[in-house]
Image (cartoon, rainbow, N blue to C red; front, side, top):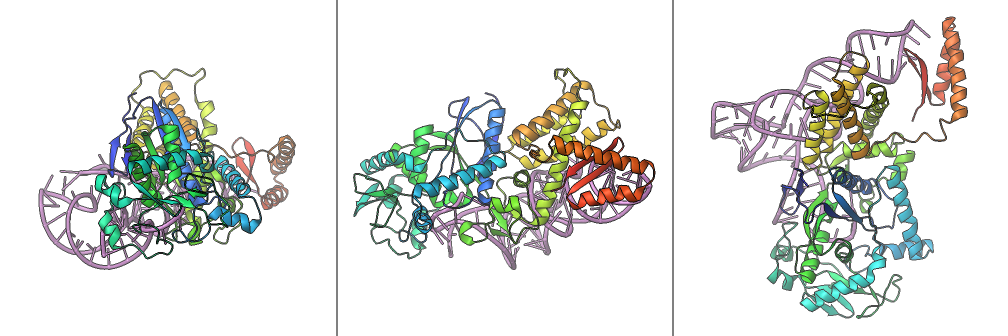
Length: 496
RNA sequence: GGUCUCGUGGCCGAGUGGCUAGGCGGCGGUCUGCAAAACCGUAUACAGCGGUUCGAAUCCGCUCGAGACCUCCA
């Protein structure tokens, strides 16, 4: 497959030409959510980012297997190895089965992602469903001599690993430096070194989520599920591994160590990391207490929000920044996105009447504004998925579309087809931006009623009875219905 | 302390050694009975200081400032 897609590889910190291990197939693994709380804006960012990657890779002809996990085994809350696991704690608090908690929040996550038009991954494995694979991987690591057992727990031996393979290749860390500045944490007395990490933890009597293993009852370590499930579904080596930047160390670093220890191979060719969403310049995070949930965005029910923002607005807001940069949340920025998006989507409506029918096949035309926009969009996407520049190009396309519509500009037929196709393809198929559902709001009865009201108002205006026409307009506006007077009569729209 | 990132016009945000980013807001206009919406046009910028260069906001150095990771985290 020919392309010149460049991807920024966190491993080398450079943009590299994308060459899959076995084209046309691409294997992509992305770290999914830990389902112990409502999805927030931070969850939306990697989901939308890698949805874009998924869509674009498919668009340029790759067959992509996209694996995104659900983390549903007890990861520890609080420092080190002490404390409860998150899901178990939630289960106890709410008197639920742990799997009930998991199911509930997984559903919530899926609902929110669906509203933002995030495609489902090809496989969505649960960590709890892959305990056997994780135990198998621990065995391989033990056999290779890179792990040790202490009181029913298994730890990864970083010092030993580091003698044979460099630990820290992804995050640029050195083991000596890690040693020099490691916090004193409790519950680490079992480990040889403070930065050794658990592959398997023995369950304390009160721990709810537990599975039998050759080393007794316990649960898998935090980093292991991704290594085990990635290997299972994508092989010992695969193309792309994605996730948030905050996972780079120690999570992804440890994944590399585990896979190299078990399989003696670097597991991933291209590592991709999306940046954080900040709020007042600070990272938004559940544990920092400044996360705004997606539900709160959709309803506007949060002190920081001036109004509700639709799922599509949030998607657009995320895509308006490049995935490797931070995005700062603010009402002003969100409202700017909302208005811009509305214009872009309105442009979609103009397209059909402008496009010749039956469509002229886009011949080998290389000139004209449509072709230029198309080339620029592909160039932007090929440059490490630069959705920001794609959007700028779409606004340029929109300007042309409006000019053509008003008869101010005329494009060759072929070029107009290219322009229309480019606009639709990039906006809808690749960026995944679609008009919001108006279902239930704009049904037949309402349309009929509104038609009648608009007719009456038109009559009043014809008679210059502006008192009546203004009254209609203003009263409707109070219930969020906006009358839009145009050259060919009035139309209406539900305001947000 | 270590590793790393960033500092662009009122706000959000691309990009680049010489050629318009874009959006929102502002301003001006078209349309309208008036307005809103829509559409068109337009101004304001590259943290500071020094260096490299014919030329730097873009490369290098320093200063100041912000942030991320080093502990669960998207």
